Length: 228
Image (cartoon, rainbow, N blue to C red; front, side, top):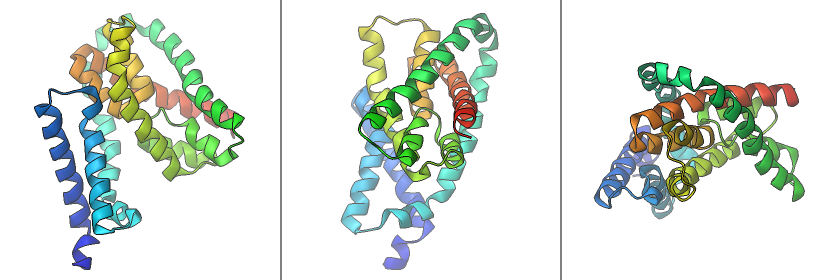
């Protein structure tokens, strides 16, 4: 039994089944923001590991191929960018201004609050990458002296919060333009937020997908210059 639980086959199967179960629940309940498949999937995996008394590091080692494929999925987001290229060109200047402001606010506000509590430097650097997609966050965090596993946790929590709360907040504030909605979801919520953005519309998803790459590049260059 122990050999089965520690094998990659178990970790991969558990991950896929948890996501499928989460997606089924999401669809059945009418696709509420707070029940994104990634949210319920994490809950299912976490509960299973607790019940089986299986160490997380063992599970993660077995599921490492899925983590590796995350980078490939991020590259695949280029398709909707190509399909909406003309639309993106028309909004290029607002995109650049939004990127410049949101990048500073996203990284600065979170790290600033932690700094006020006396948090150590490595944790601050891990938090600074919370709004870029996981593969980029891991690489950037390593280069600036943070903790990649902690950064991954911050990235996941940020994405889940944006996916769950982004839609309602946009409705309450009256934001309806696909470009504005897409930038908000992608620049702050990266891949998880973009999944939700595509459910709002193809144009919203295209801008969100574009924002993932732009925010990642901007954050990587900015932090690299500030924290050499």
